[in-house]
Amino acid sequence: MEVSGPAGVWARDVKLTSCRPQPGTQGPPWVSGFESPELHRRLGLRRMKQFFAAAPEGTLALPVRRSLDRAWFGGVLFPYYGHFLVESLAMLPNIPDDGAPIVFMALQNTVTAWHRQFFEDIGIASRLHFTDADSTLQVGRLDKVDQTAVFQGDVSCAYIRWMQGRFGASPPSGRKLYLSRREYKKARVIGEDRLEARLAAMGVESVVPEKLSVREQARLIDASDTVVAVEGSALHTLAFCPSPKKVIVLHRRNEFEHAFRLQFAVQPQFRVTELRCMSRYAANFVEDAELDVERAAASIEASIASG
Image (cartoon, rainbow, N blue to C red):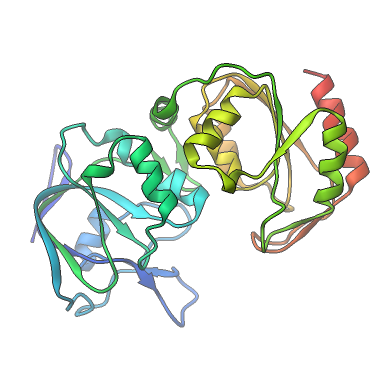
């Protein structure tokens, strides 16, 4: 193994596999897929509040499934939508369009159909290689570029410029959208069905983002002039959107997620309004919250009217 790089960080003869859960600990929930602690420290994804634990010695005694002479490290492929947009895509803006392979380290074997569709839609699917949990991928030289976003730590202008360039601006539709959570199985918003009925009377159309591809979501949201949403990962889709608009966000937890403020800070084309309209706020990211429907409807209507 060789780790070097005044012009970047890279390593020779790297073996990597998928990240796996770290059982029986209160620390980081995932174990790195790199073969050594040193590689993990130098090549691993930077995060704000926690870091992937280094793999214990001997955990990569798995068969080599395939080998690559040289590749770029794309990062960790998250199955969770918001983490995927902010973390999994954070290195791509700095990876050159040189045709060289890009390796993503998956969490277990969670490479989904929507992941593949997204990479197809942005034109890089043919360059990608994903790890799996049952074998290793060997790379003769693995290069890593700087991240353009760090989860809960920073969102750069370079990241936003790259995201806005994936699908471009959409022709304005003048639509007003509410990004519904109605099909969520956890972190639900009690009373959302009644709020959606009130919003429909104001001319605000409800959409369920997860029924659409990422490209379809981005184009629909970018074309709208107003977006209303309860705090959640669907708001990260706004990173693709260059067109000015009103964004109305209802807090779901007692403390508003810092990652959204970091994102909106580098998107000055948005007029963002935060509203506190819950009768019961969620204590964490999986707990249900409950709307004060009358207060929410009145506050949203007033915000729309103010322009």
